[in-house]
Image (tube, rainbow, N blue to C red; front, side, top):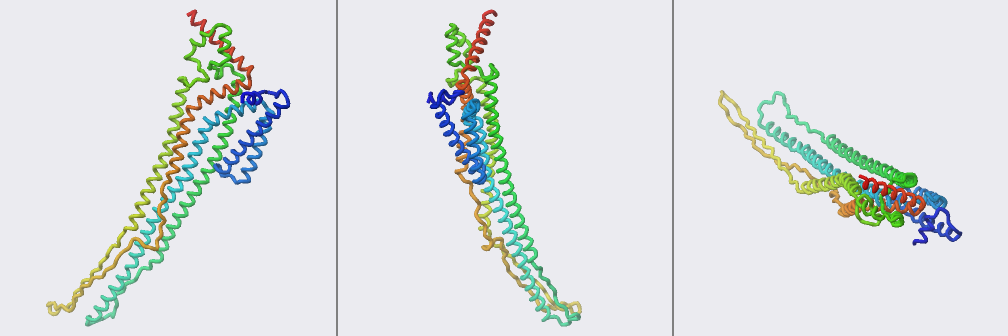
Length: 425
């Protein structure tokens, strides 16, 4: 592995064997990344398969040429890998979590809200139909009352009839049905719009993340090569050997609190504060995800209770009582002729078997498990990012050894000046 890394990090291969070894290494890297890039485009970003194939093949060929021919590109690419596993990897994992939440939880919320609206629609439709159909009871009642009155009336000057007109309920029922259909179509349109916006946003975030990953690795390499102070706070082997050769090993011991051993696990104060700040920012995203999960459970609970209560709704009995007294007033003396006292019964229904309502969609526990696992990995990458940055410096040092020597001499001279100033003061 050491020999292969030496071939990979050399500016120019020494012979044909190293040339073919470098080409084989670059080919393996491009094939692996091309397959992962194709799967990412097709599965996560939901591109069509032919577009995914074309983009993956183009990406693989360009990457192969750049890695094989340009030495700084190999260095920048190698620096990007630890960053991809930590900082950019955290962003990609966070984007994946948001995508999982939107694709799996948002449709459940919208579906359960539609179930609630359908319950309200069914209750309104059935109750209105039952109420309007009860006008038949009123019509029959008034018809019988008219018949009774016609039998006992002695003088009918106008030969009139009691008129009762029935309300045509088809128009109202159609309006209720159209309102329910409009609400269903509106929610379906909102669901499609949300999914399209999330897909477009996810593609933009993915493109920005890839571009930012390339920019960050190039920016690190540029500062490493041009600025001797940049990220030069490590006790490397070359610095230790330089101090031993000049008999100044005490400089490294006295400056230990300010310097970091790249192979150690200790985090400096600045590194620890940076991790805590990132943890606070990540907690905001976690809180938003938890709010979405809680909203899903709340809407499901309300929809489930509504569906079960609708099935348990009993009919409401309605009783129409008619009391009528007919008599003759002769010489201010009343003579009763007929007393009418009848009751008519009807039942109002709020639910019907013809109104089919699909049960609400319960939350998927596997989605919550996957999101929780991804957030655990994201929190872990925050602390691993510090060690990934140390690895980036080590990668750059292996590609540009002469520059690493200059950085070691610069840091040794800086420590020597600080030590002399301390002794003088």
